[in-house]
Length: 290
Image (cartoon, rainbow, N blue to C red):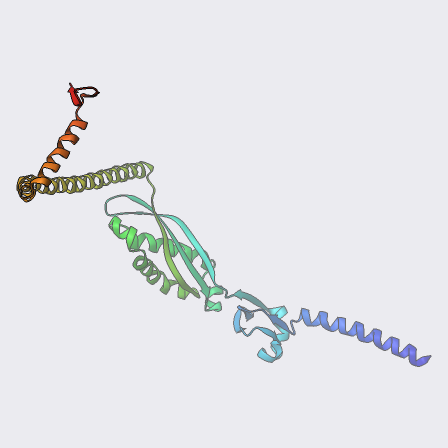
């Protein structure tokens, strides 16, 4: 019985001691669990003493020694995410060389590469980076020809990135991919005028294409008619010679010539619009009454 009571008391004491140890460990930050793409920066009496960027379970006592026990009282742990952030700035106003007000939309990526500079060099590094990107867009894209703004987006995107990268590095940021995704007109009257000109130009091009097609067809028809007329003229010129030669060949045999002319006479009679009367009696034969 005494052994059972001792066992119960020991288990309860172990349970409460473990709970107290866990609470004290959390209060004094005896261990931490660091997620992926995360950095913890430690300060002690307002000075940076180090950082931990290896994901997983770690013990501050191992990294910083006994003074890590005083971090909760006289220090602070800053958690910084190093994941890639994406941002899109819409309708950044620039003017082309022709004086057209244009709206530019730019997309860019950014991530923290220096957590210390990110925390202590600028109170709002993300907002400052966006402001710098907007300023670089206006600086690099203003007073350019309209065709350059609309066609050379890759080169202009690289210029904006080169303009912003040095400043962003001072704040602990690295500017990643940068791309100008949209260049649009802001003046509604100008948009309407451009649409009208485009529609008129399309109509002119369509009419020119239709006229060119009709001209080609007319040329083909006229060429075909010309060749057909030439062939018909040649055939009419040759026809008497051919017919005469054939008749001369037929005349060499009188019986064939008589039969041929008789047959032609009958065909002409049948094609005639007159009436054919068959008479019987003493006068036999065919009488034609026109």
